[in-house]
Image (cartoon, rainbow, N blue to C red):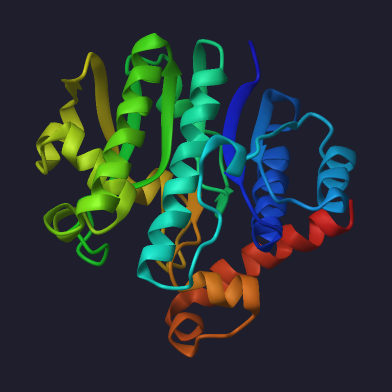
Length: 277
């Protein structure tokens, strides 16, 4: 069986620790059964060398964003955050377009893999598996989280990702209702394509733009909540307020006092194990 590919991207040294934790978690769960793939820009030579030395199975592709027309002069405001997300979507679209056919996990770099994903991918029937919210404390007014997809890559999936990139650019230019309905830039662009907010549609699956899509609850593949029970969680997503805690070590008592301590310890443990490699 071919190694399962994990595609992610990074465009700043600020995200290096995230990348280290993600790679370490994939290595510990999958070993040689995984093939991490990183598209990057603006990573220091030392970080690139460290990854190649500690995780030699990882494939790294340098991609000059400015050369390809991406604006890297990003302000620290709402528009700037949208530009960050747009860069990520652009990178992942390039990665999917470059990749050969077959199974691949496309995910943000601020994630941690806890368990194998075999249950969700063997046998694979879908073109794209995405994640949606089912629990009352998941901000269910915004029904999906676009942080991870499992894809069976093909020409039709590549076309879907290209459309997703175009819709992302449209949302940036227009703002307004899509963001209010879906809660984030990538979700808004994805929502404009799938045109349904019904959980039953997500659960049973549907066809859009020639692709068969099905949803899996976030609590299994894209857990963002600060919960003590990780028994059924395959992938944890350290989004939102975690960034100041993990990148800048600015501790948020609200996070740490609401069962966030276990999530923090898990992330730090992986970072320490990476540093010891």
